[in-house]
Image (cartoon, rainbow, N blue to C red; front, side):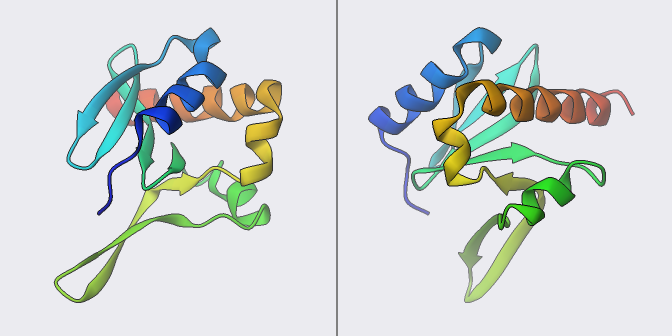
Length: 112
């Protein structure tokens, strides 16, 4: 798994600044946390947000898929994180709406 560049990380953190995300290095990527819950993931110059049954459909409708990586010759998919549609990075206010949804999903999972 290739790591995320500092420039890409700073770009995403800038977009999410109103939410005050806290980045933490994880393996080859960066987890994005808000009040102790991980709502986002940066890996291989891609940004993923936490989803649930309710929010997954809007990602799929936008053509996005789950985070995946190859391990021991097979593809592993993490259906809890979907890639942010590229066009959304050009719409900062809308991106914040999606990120807030991801924070709510992550918070609900933590409190189950």
